[in-house]
Length: 195
Image (tube, one colour):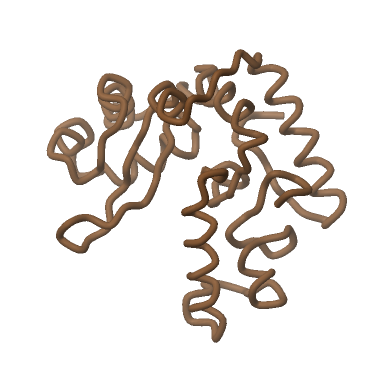
């Protein structure tokens, strides 16, 4: 993670928490693997670090991103390019507007259900994969899981991130980083925007 600033939760070729803990990539879900408990603990340790943020950055999968790359993801997340906003479903459009208005909202909040209807989980995932919001899995008071969706400006204020990196530079530097990562590990990681 220190070398690239990125680490996947799971991937068949690229460095990931799963392969590092299990000693090799795991085909399919890691939950039933003998190392599943250890993987779960390590994933949670990383997720709890103050210098790491989780995004659906590479291949739409959970990617741990070190703080050295936060200006990059913020610049990309706030760029509002066609790949992010083109073709958004009406529920996704309403949900992203709700997040932008409030700064932070959970998918179990009645307002998010009003915005996205019964497809709130699908809309939230769509927004995460387009990097329009920052989504974090939370355990609710009732013991269920929900997503906390945060706007990029709200996140930047919360963590005191001050950056003016241009989106074009951020995208180019992230693309070069991923190109090097793929070359070294014969990986197939892709960023969410077109090359």
